[in-house]
Amino acid sequence: MLRQGDLVVGVDGTNVMGICSITKNGLDSYQYQDSFNYAQTSSYPVEWIDWKQCSQYSPDFTLRTSKKGFIGAPHIRKKKEEVINAWKAYQKRVNQ
Image (cartoon, rainbow, N blue to C red):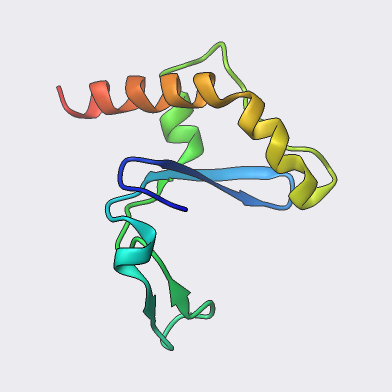
């Protein structure tokens, strides 16, 4: 279940596209919005940050996924600390 403060990594194929921080608990914020292609939403609204923009503050860390699509998710989970550190470095920079 998504909880406020969780980080979500957005992936398109094998490319990491963005990251966001959940603003509301998933169950508390579920909505059906037929104006979207994927109408079932949770934790809305969130602000997606381009991964390239976020990761520039952690230049020694590169995040990639497996070519096996959804099966690549555990690979990202193994990099949890690096993702959190990249997010914190980004947040520190933009909040200066």
